[in-house]
Length: 252
Image (tube, helix red, strand yellow):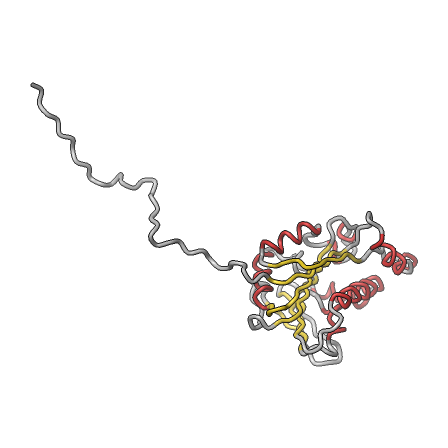
């Protein structure tokens, strides 16, 4: 189930907690991809809060927003680069994307395998994709006060397994958003402390999991074709055929 684009917009651009989340996640994404000069960067879901740092140097930036969610003009005060699209059919050429980030996309998709197949299709040679999903063990996925309380949360093992099954090779991962999901401004002032201390504590569970992956070149796609020389034996085959009567020799 996708959240409405207006709800996401209100959280990230009109609430102090959403703006704090935006800063934390954006910083971590830039740490993964510090330089995208001359590259095509695409976001799927509601990735616009973290795409802005790539506008200056990237060759092209595109924000894909799924139809059930809705679309908004972005960036504000500049030519629009956001596009509404079908979840399983993106208006992009095959193999032309250098960096792809999925934010509020995978956990809300009802058929993630089809969406991952499309993500794999558009990713070019040497391209990287960054999956950002709610952490099943974190407290952010246990409250509906933020967008991370909706959809399907993941553990690191679950996410990496799903990526491998669908033709991706996880390269590295990180966890972020260790602050409390509270709208109280007093708690929000402690966010920098928690974000600094959280990664150093083995028992601390961040609210978001990030997995950077590349696509496997030898992954088989499409529908398998049956060998024409192989003939199946039907369960009722042969019952309709006429059988010869046995010959009974007379007694002597």
